View 1 (cartoon, rainbow, N blue to C red):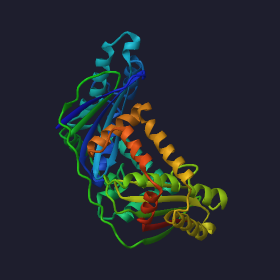
View 2: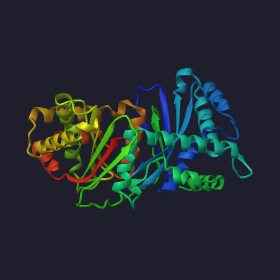
View 3: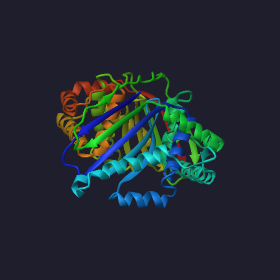
View 4: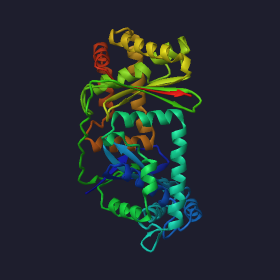
Length: 396
């Protein structure tokens, strides 16, 4: 079940190819995907060392292959990417085929020993991943965000971190990793090419269904003391509309107005006017039907910070923002949308995700939807926010 699409865009001196494998999501599969991405970058049968990989990339004028994992909704996505120069500029178009052979060697001819990935590489990358996970959990904001998802979705894939978790990692064996790799090779594959080449799409484009999010009517509050440099607050609000609902557009405007930019209401009223935090922003997560407000602050300012955030949200519910502020917000969002084709990576990823869930891909149409959002729509979106979680990770 493969699908291939060519995104034609002039003006780039590079070409980008992305392979997206879609897999079932679990803590174990996310951890395995993260580990596999690292192991594949250590060598293949044709390029058995990191030095050999880099040397071949240099011979191909800077061709770069890299691997990663991501989570979209409740699906795990293993991503393999190849970035090359446009070899027509070097009058060597034959190098494009060589670059793709190089990329496919790393992906499809891994460095195996007795039917498994080389033990020393497996153990080294497992240890490095464990260290990265430990570092992530030491960062107060990263920890608070991860912990908030675990608390909000304790029995759901929606609470899983894209790189997995230490407990799953500790239990993994070399046999687990080769079994996962074989499962990956049988998974649905979406291939996207971005560059100045016009070709017809191939294969069948299958779309996925978004998981239903269980909406709780009760707000839960948690406090944790940790040895950190600053306290972190994560406030989560649920919204009742699903991923493809038309209320997504007013929600995008609400988020940008609330805390999605350096001129947002939270930034101006909480940080600039009252000096209650080091940082504050909001994020709208369409997959999980959530608004998140995240702030780093001193613990003696916590109660005033909470009350001021609620004041800002109440003011939005009452429509206490000007039409000028609304238009500036919509213009800013449209500029952001309009800039997507200026980045190969963003353009390709945007096309893939929207294909995956059968969403509107035309950027101009999406900008028109943003422009149509009225003040009453934003007020309605704000009034639908309901408290879901208040997590306070306090500096010990």
